[in-house]
Length: 207
Image (cartoon, rainbow, N blue to C red; front, side, top):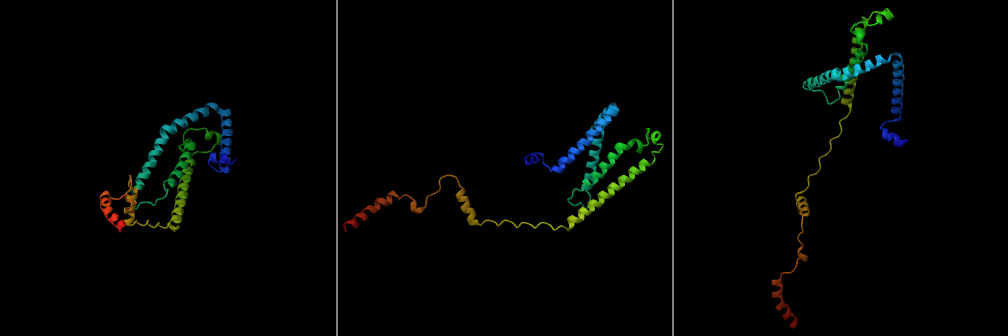
């Protein structure tokens, strides 16, 4: 079990939540396909084409524009993931618009004939939900900035002591490649000095 969890890379609760989501999505897909298979296929293809060719370039351009506009603002924002506090409410608002756009934009739909209700309030409801999402995101961002301002800064690491000049020369001498010079006590004797010292040594022996 431990090997399986290490291979999965998350906790067992995460795995159970993902399985539950896949099960719910599969149940919804089976019910929708059995009810209107052609409509599901058309909606799926339209969502793929509309998202990859139209929506993704648009919201990527909007995201980069917001980041570029606020990055050059004075004074600069602190080093916090502020852009996620804009992305999340914008993504949720866009998802609501994608699901309910016929009623929000007051397009022709069987909603009025089926419910005898007007679709006029939908645009105001969507705007209200969007405003609440951005307000909650701003409050969460403010709390995060306040918590980071109160948290103490990590202590600065002391600089490493500089090595002495003698140590550098000794290290450089040891790091040189090739044979090292022998100590004076182990150096071989000079032949000229040895020949001059032989008569002196012989006279001492005769005495």
